[in-house]
Image (cartoon, rainbow, N blue to C red; front, top):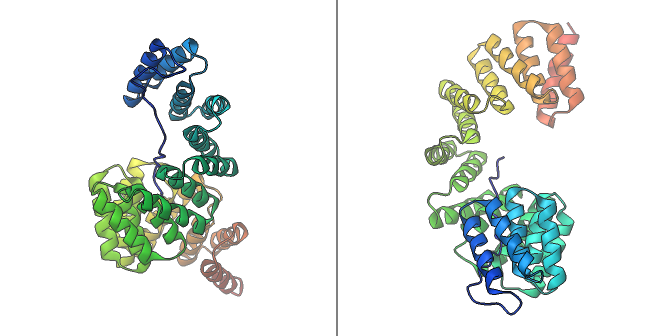
Length: 347
């Protein structure tokens, strides 16, 4: 499931008056850097922050902001180095711990990220965004209860944060509490009616509740807001497929594949729709493509094996089903594959 981009909160400082440890010129360069960074001109922002540091090597905010600019560029190691320097200059600088936590999070080092968020919260327990960031780190570590507790705290401190509601919804959804997840997505959408991910994920929750019409309605809205949303087409196609509307399902899979020709799931799902329509050759062609893109996709081998079975090509069916079992299937698909294999081998 697509979770969407995580919009980490970060502290960015623009100092308009002379700081005790910074010269007027250093402050001017810092402020120019902030303006450039707000415009997305990260290289120019970094140049300005560097000039500020050259003028005042003790300028904590300049290191912090340059670290954020490096983070935005995806240069996580340099971001960490700058945050290290900011923390060395001021060990009580809560935002530098938060920002270094973001960089560690981006590198997948969740334990270090959480340790930095802990320290930031210890220094400043009222910063909602740090609870939100730590909640995301716990979520990514699979600790859903701690993630929910942090999102709770973020929402208590900032009840207008649509992201916190959305990501708490993810955590509830992963725990199987779909009603709570939907309630959180509802709140996120109320706060931000343009929040594409909230519609998409609410559609996902409705789908698993078996409410296909509401799921489709939410995927419709997600696609209206973002016509390039590949996963929304795929998931809407699957909902149409479950309703028995195979032509609409295929149309959605077609669109997903047009937008992303490497989208494995869409080929597999379109193959299944063709299978249910009785168009076994097209089904096999789509499974072929799915397997070419992901040779470890057990479900595609299983589906292709079943198509070959219905076509009467038992040798190919046996080979595919055995490969699917070797790669590993969920219990229901495993039982189906084993039953068909036993039937073919007994003939």
